[in-house]
Amino acid sequence: MSISALGNNNNPALNSLSGFGASAATPAPKAGKSAKGSAAGGDATNLGGATSAEDQSNRFLKLLVAQMSNQDPLNPMDSAQVTSQMAQISTVQGVQTLNKTVSGLDSQFTQLQTMQGAALVGHDVATEGKTVRVDEDAKKGDGGFEITNPATSVSIDIMNPAGTVIGTVKMGPQEAGRHSFDFDVPDSAKGQPLTFKVSAMNNDKPLDSLSLSYNSIEAVSNVDGKLAVELDNGKRVAYDAVWAFL
Image 1: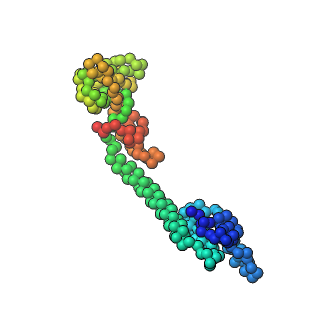
Image 2: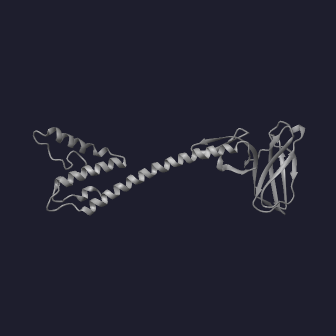
Image 3: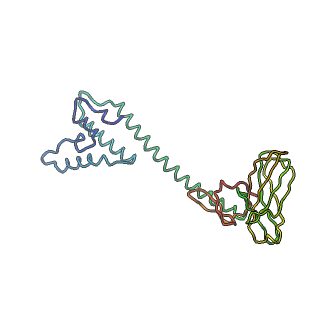
């Protein structure tokens, strides 16, 4: 309901409030009072520029005072409608204040999450991928996978950059869930980036599997308001992309 609905249909001067223009319920300035009349007219003219809840409330109150000052004594405004309109504006102001409060809390939560995430530095994590993590000194490689159904046999092929299989890890029957594997890296593959492929079978039926790469967290950061972890392979992944902490 707009304030124009509170006007008196028998009073055209009052009903012109809905236009929010210079004619909004402001009498023409009289002689000797031109300065005061011009100020009132200027306020009414600027009412259309209000955008915030506070500005809209001020605009409403100015129009309400002007309308009450010029109402027909024999047919006054409906007080219930005025009260309803004022309550609606108060609700808008309350929602605007609540939005600012929630926005501030969200920012504080993000900062707190980043500080807590710093404790993860140095921990190993599993993320979706097919890269074998290699310890050059120990000549050992490792990785992981997850299956949603039990498998009667699982084998992992290790491949060099050319896609050639340089070794296979046979794991036998495995339960549903997350599993890890180790691989002895041959001297011929030393210093090469290696990948792996999981083949899980339930008798003669192939099973779906999720390949997991293992890495260490070197740092945490904040990206677009979300926590991210920076891995020792140079990649940055979102915190919710971490599949498991090892």
